Image (cartoon, rainbow, N blue to C red; front, side):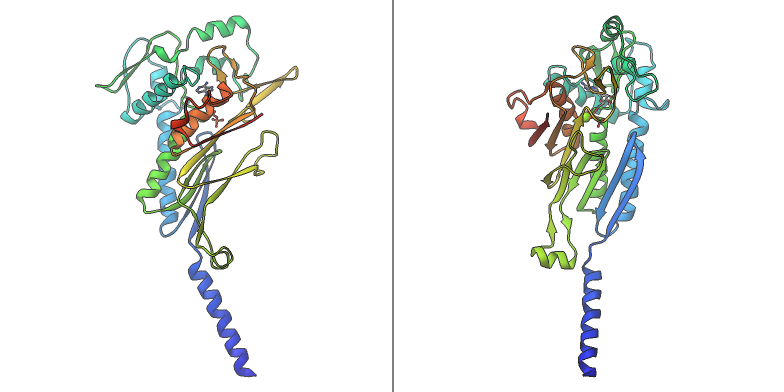
Length: 323
Ligand code: ADP
Ligand code: MG
């Protein structure tokens, strides 16, 4: 009888040790950066230090790309005399160039020169207001992606009209997510899920523990991302999608907005009207290989309200609208 007890105990210990040994090393860290909550989750050896390096890279990107930090490259462009070339860091030049390519692709729906319009509305600040038609007309005269000139030889950027200013808020988070994933990958991380305030990038699959592995008959399963429903409480997972090595980004009217006289005024603008976009959709979610693409296109599709009959199909995998 005693022997049976010992064998049972030994078996239990073996099972516990095996489970601990089998359990993939998981590390998850959260920081407030890029004006949002960023949570990075990585699995495997070195996950902890790799996440720190990814956060360093995200913070570096914020320092360069924020339109509001006085030492940023974008701030430098916005506060230099107009109609003059301003030399910038190569990666800043490259992302501005890419953003303008999205403007071209979307017939100006995606536009990083909208800052005079977003400043006027002040959504999410203490100065938010519904501007007059005249104010909107004046601000509209200071925008337009075609008024940005680039010099490829010197990595310089010129804003051709007085009062122009850039804001990369519609694409920088996506770029940061791609860069964070690149850093993790260079550190040898194969499985990770990065959440930059709802801009998600997935690397590989989610490793399973011993008991889950036995239950599902495999060691990994794809990450499942819940798409936020516009009116559901924050964080409550909505419609689930599974993604492997790709990005999921949602742009919606419920992120930043104020309401006046029963009307909702949100932070994504139609460059043609200078008003918060009103295409009939509450949100647009884009799944694409690259976070930069998913970010820019989700903003554009939210404004357009559809993918214009698949005109952009070659650039992304899936688009989901909520109405
Ligand atoms: P979020 O930043 O809330 O995740 P988006 O990626 O859609 O959502 O970006 C919205 C931000 O992009 C706005 O805060 C503003 O800075 C900028 N923006 C607003 N309208 C446009 C537009 N039509 N094209 C490009 N950028 C835009
Ligand atoms: Mg975007």
